[in-house]
Image (cartoon, rainbow, N blue to C red):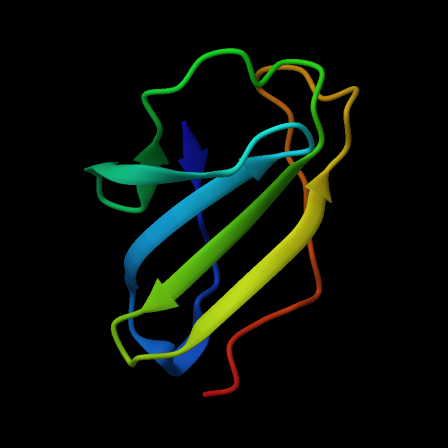
Length: 84
């Protein structure tokens, strides 16, 4: 489960996918509100990247946001953000 915050003026997240360091892109599904989940297991021990599309139509890839040593319940931040 992933919670996305601070989308700024770009609206909300329309679609999202994640990629492990040893996997292809895996679609994610809105669980509730800004919480997203994927139905794939086996991501523990892999660095994670995320691809988002905003309701404003912007595409953004957050590459290697989560390091391989992540554990459940941790928070990670990136300084990337949507342009508008």
